[in-house]
Image 1 (cartoon, helix red, strand yellow):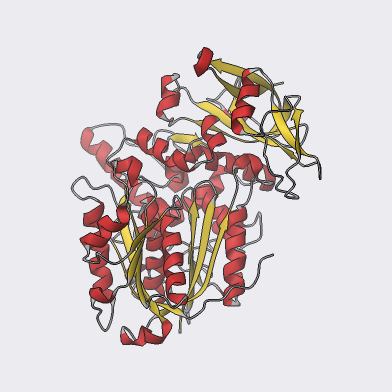
Image 2 (cartoon, one colour):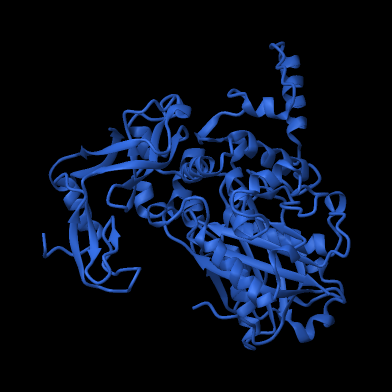
Length: 421
Length: 138
């Protein structure tokens, strides 16, 4: 039976930082974490002495595979001068730093620590696309790998089940992609900070310079329908339905609520945290939702005493376009089967009533898997504190934001609700 | 048959013998393919083996063009995608498997709900023998 959860004592976020996301030949995991850590330190309004940090919780999925180097907790801890304080790595596939955040919250709520650094890092771009696909497939369930499923393949299959049940089509998923790119265009840290229209214009320009025939797409959807421009990866998932291969890092500084004002007059409070787990495709009773996400959402809403309509802005785990549609339903923002219509109607746009993935999401901001959960919370930090620049949502009385992080093919899911008071 | 543990290894040994086997809970009758040693419906641990007929319907599928290295070795890739799917067996359990004998270059023509039948694809011999469960249109 799921009980109403509560923390032993309140926890607040008083700082956050994230590296630029992208594919970097000349930067490694340590360089990226230093970048995020530096911004986090300077984001603490009244300053912080890093030697007061009691412990580090670091999300990393599989640098073991990507970089042939494991045991990243102490490597990062040493890098930023925390040794000999404890460093713990959390692994929940793409939700690894969602878990790090949660463990950090528990460590403070228990009364054991007063200040904890939580974050994540992943370095993926030094491998070929096929190798990355193989590395990510480590997080499918064993039967799925045996049946040939890749990550895009699992989400492609979920899309066919969703299409069959609700009558949605590929055209609807294109609305997600177009929106994500429009948001990422306003995010200087995004891997692809360009709109689909920008990409189309660049391709026309490049054809012109090379003396090739000029492509003639009437609009974004015609571009996305073009198999040359948007090739299939795992049908019906095409290139522009999929998040990229990325390197990056993110981190947040958590403190006990009673000392938050020593660091800032404008902390964010952790008012809901949920985590769920799920099964493989073959054992799920339905292929159009994620059991883990629904469980995590219920746990977090009950803890916060909030309903889905109270969440004013959310980062949602859109590793693939179909994932955003399914998750905005699982989180209760829209009814099952209504998510794709909500996106089509513009309800999830930056200036809509329920802005989703203002950062550009995993699709455009990038998805260095172990860093994603921390980077999602960084976006909520920036938005709630009204520092999101050109992509700042115009929502009035903006107070409540949330981040949803999914690991594997639905094996792990976290949902975290933050409040500005 | 009775003595085998309800494990993935036993499941694969049965596949080698061209048998698709699941476990059924003696307490509540819940069926699991691949077999489970513990019933997730009632927590019972008394199981029995049941053989599936190998017929079912496609519930979800994908045609994969960007393939992992192991599938590349089998000749699959951007110009030759393969299909993987979720099949709901007549007996009610679902399995994941490769789907063969469908035109993977025309995925629009592959339909959720289509009837399928199991076949067994053997790879290697002796100790290394591995059998993959695949389905094809009925």
